Image (cartoon, rainbow, N blue to C red; front, top):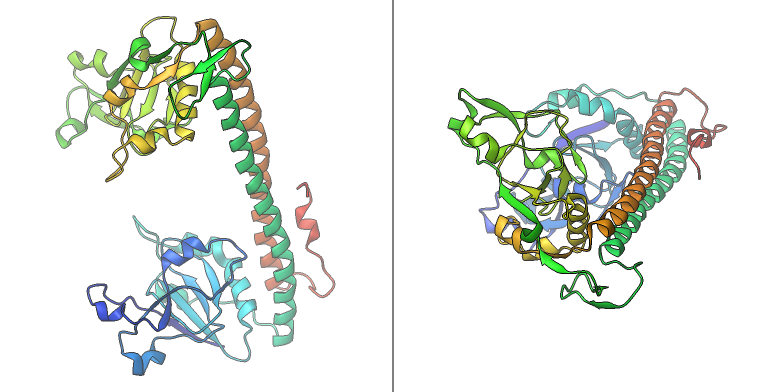
Length: 421
């Protein structure tokens, strides 16, 4: 029904493969740019010179209409080539004969996507190996029925994809709206009275009565303990938080590791409820407040522990200041971008933010907390709708390809039942 093939990856150490390029070539890097479900026809990629030489370039090219499937990294991505081109070795390819419609095969492969991900193996990058690819089987109705199924699925999945794109756009707009609310509260946009320049380009003006002071004035900032091989063993092992455990306004504790914290170090590296944890790297400035859910907890280097010096300083207010500044790329610009951006303890201590009276801070954070709860509810609703759309899209493809209904009379519109259009 189809000729199964694969690709190859030329050596980057040989410039003759990359100069005077003539053969279009698709790699996994292109897949990440084309992960949208509707991107089924690929026609624009980088080009390369065939390792077999220009005279034999046909030996490495697959003809337009070839169906491709990624075998690693983004396992199970499938598409149709819009022109003659070559692929990297990370793809399986099918050049269809007259009894197999490429669009039908494409939908059949997409119906298999969950199963393909389950059979993929590997500790770092999951991979489907060619012997497993060779065992793939699809129902084979007559060519005319294949075309009807493909036409039906093209139309119905496109409609579902439009809904999914709209929901994703709504999620983006919700996040942008919330960050605007945070910035307005941090700069006191709704506070009455005269205003003054903050001296911070990203912040603009603030109420005249609000002082602009360094973080160090109201908070103690300490970096966590560095991990090394010797410290994963010892007589005083205890759980600690890493950079990845700290997300925006959320701390995960389901994958904690152990490190040695002798008694003389415990006060220095322990956490109290209400401590603000701030990421040094990764996404510099990302922060969350420790809630004390585990009585004994420590923290690793790459996290700053920010502890209020007195009741006059609100960790919650500082959290929202960091949220606003990070959204404005303040720390990414100031960090060491030659490698990975970092927000050092010295930089964090010296950073200046507006610090109004504690009563003003609490009033603003209470309102932002309420906004945040509403935001989470709306995001949860949209995320559930996206999951429903994805599940029903998958079910529609599977049902159509396996002949569970007659596509010439069926409609896939019931798959959006429960999802507001």
